[in-house]
Length: 72
Image (tube, rainbow, N blue to C red; front, top):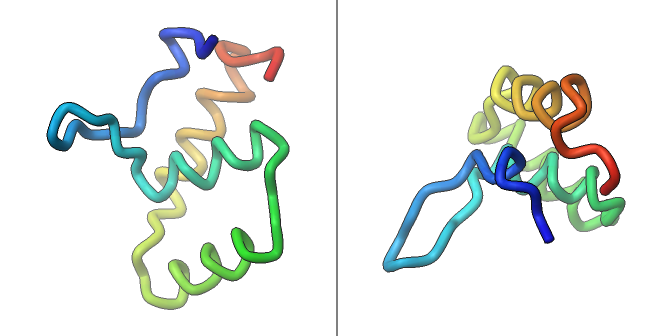
């Protein structure tokens, strides 16, 4: 079960939570699911200026820095 304080970085679309690109990246690392494909997708997002690095840093701080989501 995901802790409520870890539920951020998404928007609602048709009743479904859709993660921001930055949150999907942080969650994949947090859940220890990195892959070559994820790395390539993130590199492409950076090149295309679709990835907000400040938002990644903010989300990573919320996940790891403050300990709200520890235990993942």
